[in-house]
Amino acid sequence: MNQAPAFTMRNRAVAHTSTIMVALPEYVRQTGPNQSLNTTKWERIMVMLKDPSDTAAIKKLTDQVKKGLAPEVLDTIKIINYFQDDKTNDQVKNILDVIFNIIIAITMFLCFFSLCSSMSANLMDQTKEIGIMRAMGFTKSRIKILYFYEAFILVSSSCMLGVMIGVIVGFTMVLQQVVFTGIPLIFYFPWTQFIVIMIISMFCAAFSTWGPAGNLVKNDIATIFRSV
Image (tube, rainbow, N blue to C red; front, side, top):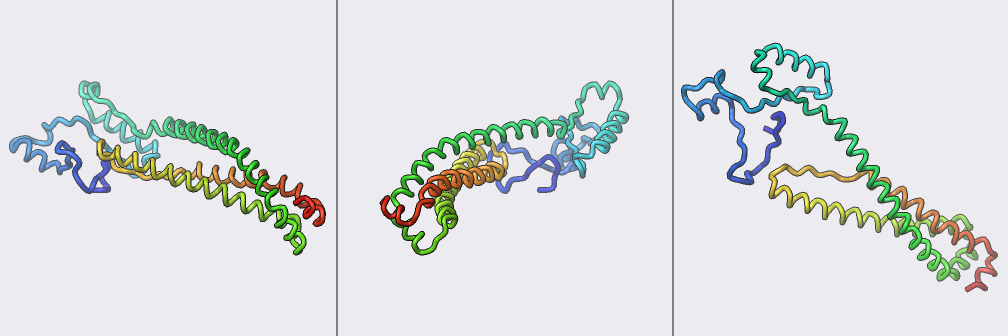
């Protein structure tokens, strides 16, 4: 039943008025023992091709249907290609993705200032530790990378926690809609936005630590200890 075209099956009924699917002979037997399929009136007929993107096959099938129907019957029916709206749906999806990406970028940019302030204060508090590491033989670039890792872990863990909370809250709201509408649940994870967040987090971590750490480690070891 899961392979039936245009229908998605559920494991349980959600209402007493749920739509059911039966074979055509069983439908005729239930509606009237003396009724024939040729005299049955259909509200709609859904046809799913093997390749929905094959426009030539769709046009061929449409032409065959139009040729097989009488003109007076053809005027009373409407043939709709469901996949004609794919381009519009893709455009709307792309626009929404761009809007969300811009919102993510603006939010990360605003948080960048708070991260710069926190990392600058952290580096000033750890001036003695930086001097000790320089005395132990740590290179300047090594110390910069060390604090870059610290900032990146801080930002990325916060972003991942925010994404997880958002996904859980959104998934819960979708579950509530499923209870009322009976539409099957389709889980979607925003991979594009997640990748954008991680990339921006990397840049924020680099810009917030490279400058303050560079200004601190460019001094001599004695100067670093005297600034404590």
